[in-house]
Length: 224
Image (tube, rainbow, N blue to C red; front, side, top):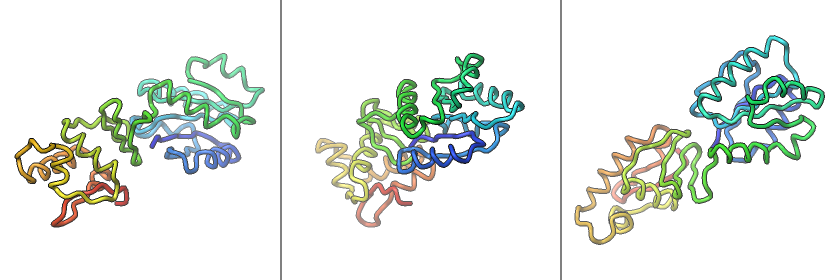
């Protein structure tokens, strides 16, 4: 799930964007003041600046937020009115794209997806997503809130089979057969060791999704 951060003083646009992003793979957060600096930048995928309602004193705070976003490879989209197009001549290089507020319903979702794809911030089609936890099978990569999780091959495979079969309980023997195949003789305790290591590497709350079913085995469940 990608965190979309909207800076706006325009309630109408805020409501429109909320409706557009509802049910999509975005965690939507609104900041009412441009003076509020970007929180936890590494967790944020895209920052949206709605300048349709702003004061002259907002220009410097906007530039400060842009600098932070640039530093952390965060996508940047600006919403403006057609008569505000001159704003782009001043800060054109500061944004990845712009959109006029009268085109939000038609173009907004498409534009942010294109921006995120260009910046390689969208999960591949061959990825399993559970909130901010992404297991990308094309890149052989696990990330939590865009931060990489260093995992061994067996830990990756263990998480993959559990995430591919969410809410399904696997016995230790089944996991041994699926992940280690039949040529591994380390015993079911090996599964416990790898599961413990995997949980220690994945930050909360996502490590809590790796559940132990007593006297049976393990499962992955997004419901904490």
